[in-house]
Image (cartoon, rainbow, N blue to C red; front, side, top):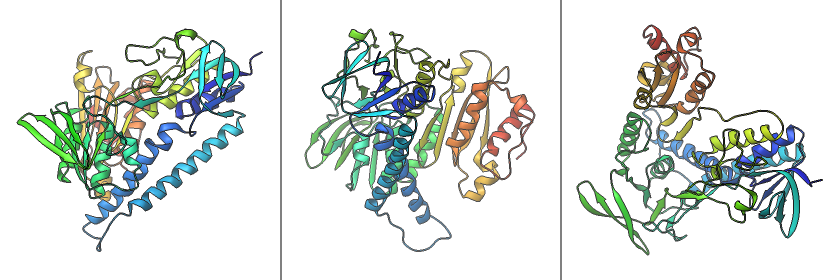
Length: 450
């Protein structure tokens, strides 16, 4: 008889979710973690970044207020202390949950070379089911070699106790935009270099354009369609940048490289246990989180795109459900949240993508048409709904105050397949930001209200 029904390798949000759900469904579970429970998201990425961004934005907005007087400045060390308190509180909560459900936490590094067995700290533990939730790690690219000093991955840079005055960010995706927001709100000179023709590659073009506009209004320099490389990294980091108008030299005391990650599977002989990976090294899984070995599951970054905690938590729950005998599959729609100067929430297809599958239309409501936006003092932004010929919402793209929460609500309708003509009878309270959904539905079915 095995020592445990389930062994989970990796105590990040994916592994945590898989462990708790398996235990809730009656399985004996051990979770192996070499560092801190909560993993990258809780300890170095999602939670700390949002804590820092929100604090810095608060001070920045106060300084720009038309009805507040006085000087405003940021004590970055104090914000870091607050961030550490938030992380500690949440991590303690996770530990209590694991204890409550009888999950055994084993500190150490696991290795696997034979099915049904894992070695931790020189001891062998046996299991019936394995969950691989080992996450991903930054990689040092040839043009942007990380040096642990002034060329850093985003999460290392974000957790510095002090920052230099001039910062160059490589990559204008989610992490690049959030860090540019944070560093500029702290009064730093920020430059963003993006290889593609728009910020937030793959996102709605109008969302990306407004994001760029807001950053530039705050004096963030944004280079698009620019190929770059580091040519010097001593006291300053210097880049050679091939811009559309020619070659430029860009420099800063700190370079943050937000591109380049890979699955971490160190110590795991995946071939020996019949687990296949794709060409990029991510573990292959189906919609139930099963790998090519039916007794082995994978969840989170190690299981491939998207590399997000949102996906990781759900994939961990799906793995735990199926191990525990509750049939479960990954959802069709997984929203993305970006905590920039204006929040961004995105789920599903753009209009261009939807039109490739058939007839579709786009409904746009500007935040200046929503009364609550005026009371909040932030009227810039919009919500776009992409709707097919059957009235089903195929995509939602919002930039503006409360966008992340609004898009979560829309995801419910998308995942459950509720068409707009049924949503038409739902009333939202007034005045609220979420009325932007009601207004979009009204316009899709009949006509505008505001």
